[in-house]
Length: 316
Image 1 (cartoon, helix red, strand yellow):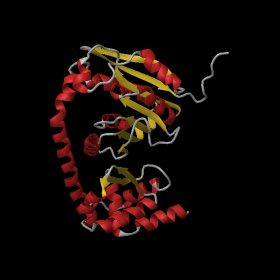
Image 2: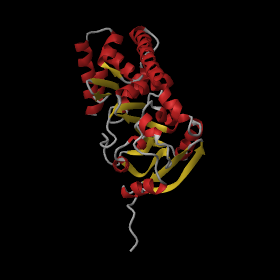
Image 3: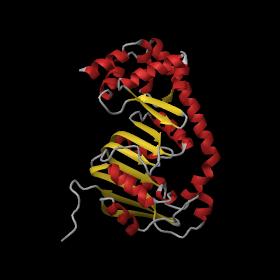
Image 4: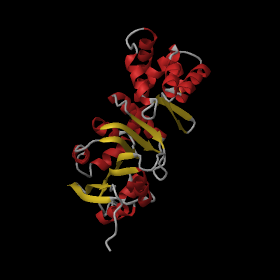
C-alpha cells in the first residue's frame, strides 16, 4: 500500500506526469527532457529524482551522462505503465511534449547515420566474407522462438540489432556495451523501431551489472572474437543466467584470415566447437548441438547452452 500511494503522489503533479509519459518513449538525459518540457534543469532534475525514488522511473549513469526511462521492473513498473496508458496523449502540454520529442529523436538518428557513414567500410568488408545476415538472424530466431523469454540480455549490443530482432519474442530486453558511440546508435535504432520495452546501458561484459540468476536469455553476437578473455565473458554470462535459461553465442568458426586482426581488431580468429563448449561447461551450462552457416571464406557458428534447473552431477 505504501509503495502504491508513494507512486501516485509522485505522478500527481503536471510536470512529473509529463516527464513520466516522455520516459515511456525511450531513454533520455535530463538535458533532453529539459529541452522538451521547457523548464529549468534544476526543476526537471528534482522532478526526476522524485519519480525515481517512487520507483516509476529508472536512472542509469553512463560516464558523465545519466539516462532516465520508465521503470521496466520493480514495484513501481506496473503502476508507471498503467498511469501512462491512462493519460491524455493527444492534447495540451503532453501533445506538445511529444512533438518536441520527435525533434530530439531525429537529432539522434542524424548522429547515428553520421557515425555509420564514417564506419560503414568496417562492417561491409566483413559481411562480404560470410553468409548474409538474414540467414544468421533466422538461425538465432529459431533458437529463441520455441519459448520466448521474459528478460533478454544482449552482451556487446553494438547497434542494438539483437534487441530489435528479438523484441517481439521477449517481455523486456537489456543491451550492454562499453562504447558510448555504439550505445547512441542503438538508442536511435530502438527509438525508430518503437522497442520501448528494451533499453541499453554502458557496462563491461566481464562485470555485468546484474544479479546472479536474473535473466533467462542471453545473446552474445559477434563479440567474443574481440575479447581478451572470452572464457571469462562466458563465465559471467553463466552467472547471470537463470536455471533453465539459454545463452546463444554467434561468432566465427576457427579460420585463418589473419588480416582481420590488423584491419578489424579481431583478437581471436574464430573458435572451435570444443572451446566454446568447454567454457560453457565450466560455467555450469549444458551445450546443445551448434548450427553452422557456411558461405564465403568464413563460417558463422550459432552455439547454444542451457543452465540446468539442478546442477549437473559428475558420474561416480
